[in-house]
Amino acid sequence: MSASSTQIIVAAIAGVPAVAAAVFAYRSSAQATRAGEKKVDAEVFERTQVLYERAIAGAEREIERLQRSQEQMASQIERMNAQIVNELDNSTRLRVQLSSLQAQVQTMDGIISALRTQLSVLSEKHPESRQA
Image 1 (cartoon, rainbow, N blue to C red):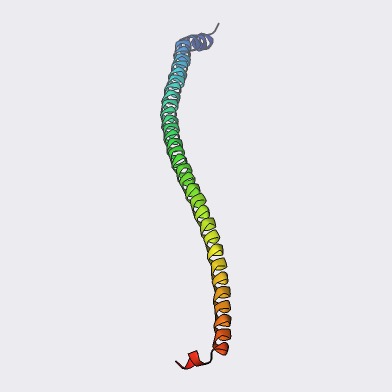
Image 2: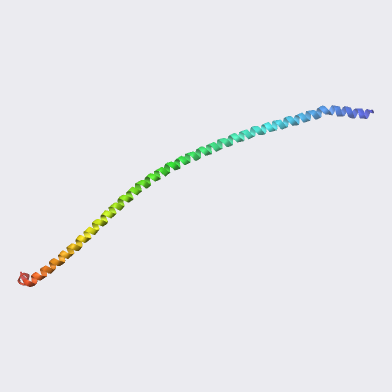
């Protein structure tokens, strides 16, 4: 072997620890990056979970508020329906009374007309009572 071959072999052997150190550094860096990414992913997951839990809690509160509002509206509708039924009863009662009063007015008109006719007949039979 020549001196230059020996130097190349020595240089190659001397470079092996440097290459090994570089590979070790790369692997360590990659593991640290993966660990860092996992840590970042875990933090993102936790923040996202907190946001979702808050959103769900807010949605549940809104659902409860809407249910209370719906119950209040149902109660108001029941009261209004009761008022409508009452008003319809009153209206029907007033219509019956109106029909009765109209019938009484027609009867009285007939009586007044008959009394006028009788008065006219009596006046013709007794003309002297007109002058008095």
